[in-house]
Length: 511
Ligand SMILES: Cc1cc2nc3c(=O)[nH]c(=O)nc-3n(C[C@H](O)[C@H](O)[C@H](O)COP(=O)(O)OP(=O)(O)OC[C@H]3O[C@@H](n4cnc5c(N)ncnc54)[C@H](O)[C@@H]3O)c2cc1C
Image (cartoon, rainbow, N blue to C red; front, side, top):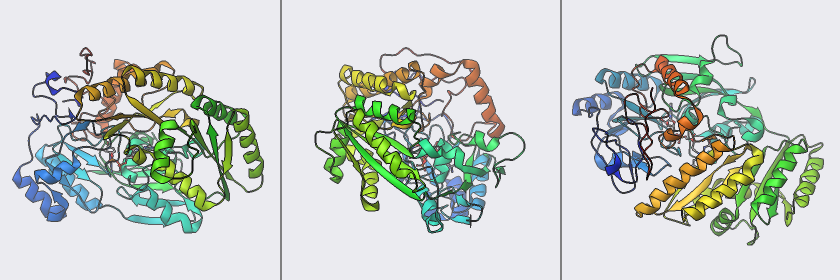
């Protein structure tokens, strides 16, 4: 069964009805078998009673990730503490014929770890060991449940860091990052997760352990490591990853450009890149975000700023001052009302805290919000922002924008109240329209948050039925029975394909 999203569950005419639901309303009928009490006992015997969550009130904690529009609690959550326990758990679940869903920290924003016809959730939160560090060769082997930021903490004393830095880096896990091929503010210069993972240890859905990639850059044969990164947990469960560490730059300068509006800020972004400068980060916040962040953290943004551009430059001390001057001049030419340079590390840290916690600050503006994720060619950022503003007006929504401007990776944040079904419908419709606009402008429906359940409907905008079938069949190499994270990325064969949203006709994609 696919992971259809409905504002009104009555719209679902699958038999039995789809499991994911919107807002307060929940559908419980499931087509897959439920977890038996015997299986729960067997899982407890493997990982210990405290690492199995089976009562309904507690499993509710796991009913969604950061995409709170879709919810579905698993029957049981199992938390293995080691690779061997993971293998034993996966084998036990395989023997029962049940489907399962991997989960890291649950910070995903596309419903990737939503259990859809997967009554067993297998979490990695107890697999937090850094197995080995090799500073000479600049690599570290981290278990899947290690929090992203903890890798850098382990390496910082040696002048090294782990470059992919999602804004959720103080919570999200390496396993989740691998599954989503996560990016972050500094991926403009340093690249995304796949550029920093040398090898993977993967437990296949039948319990077999395979090693993909290796400890060095090039390994012969197909790049199965690359294939598994971004597979959104549909190939099996990653238990560990060999990560590349990067030398901490000798010097860093962080500039803040205040602009009257986002158009001027976008002009500065394009001009910086056109000048041959490659900043480590180019992040843009619009007026609504600046106001929210200022109210929450009091960084000191001017109250009348229509847009704030963060430009981080790093590298050798020599020559960095010239780049700072060049960026300052570019911002001024683009009519920045003010350009500041962070005075010291404390000010820089405060600035990044404000940026990285922008989503949290938005929580003050409305009971709920939904973060969209799309990409457009950098030059089309002003146009997509105009279309977002038009969608906000048409659908009577408040939409704030904070995004990785250097990558053309937009993150419109749609504010709503989940108790208002009509508003939920408008959020879904506006989100769909924004993603369609991204594709129309030559971009894509996700920059870094993945497809999950949220964007299954949009896959046919980018891929032909043949493309989808080929990708779906490729998955069978790893998961022949589609038991690991079913209902994600692709419509499930023979099932209703996730195209019913408010007022939209049902459509089938043949697979
Ligand atoms: C405030 C906030 C800011 C964010 N900023 C960014 C950002 O800047 N850049 C960015 O890319 N993302 C960002 N995200 C999204 C999210 O943090 C990332 O997608 C992250 O990688 C998810 O990690 P997780 O451990 O929470 O995974 P989860 O949400 O638990 O799972 C995500 C997916 O990975 C699969 N999965 C998890 N662990 C494993 C495993 N061990 N093996 C196989 N599959 C697994 C799950 O099944 C699911 O499909 C942000 C989210 C929030 C809430």
